[in-house]
Picture 1: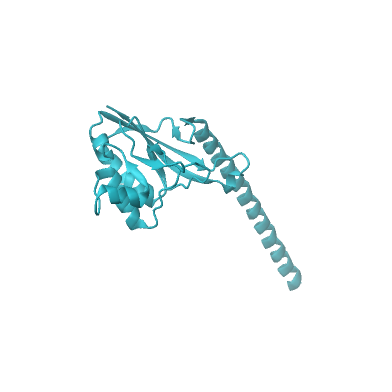
Picture 2: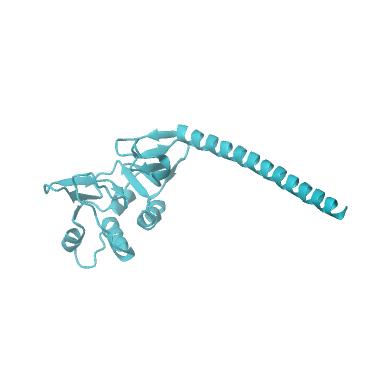
Length: 203
């Protein structure tokens, strides 16, 4: 008789466990559907800006001053996200292609562009990242500008980024995300999502 009672208790416990597990799976499914809806809604608000996978998200823009942008520039290389500047009077820097011609650059990021005709700026450690940012931002060099240009294989623009931002009448910030290597042949789970900040500069 005691064995029958124990068997009923075990069967009841198993039944409760299966019931609880079913409820948990049901609610996880609802949470996933809700999160998919939110993500789809966010994607519908993503606006394509130009041909290099720069995106902005409507409804997340604000006016900022140059003092707000400076910390973002330092974080771009430390936290690996992209900053794009639109409307600058001078490029941030120019980089040589394989033919020796200079290509104007208006963005800052660590992304390696492998299928492009120009060479990449290689920043091996945090010290080089800080040195590079100080050079393009303030023209603050350890030795001089010529050595800086040779070290990073670039040519700086005619005006420092700091002065261009300081002289702007209005700067609008747009936040968004994009996928590195955004190819149709690569599944979404294999893509790296990257944060992007776009600053539209008006003089």
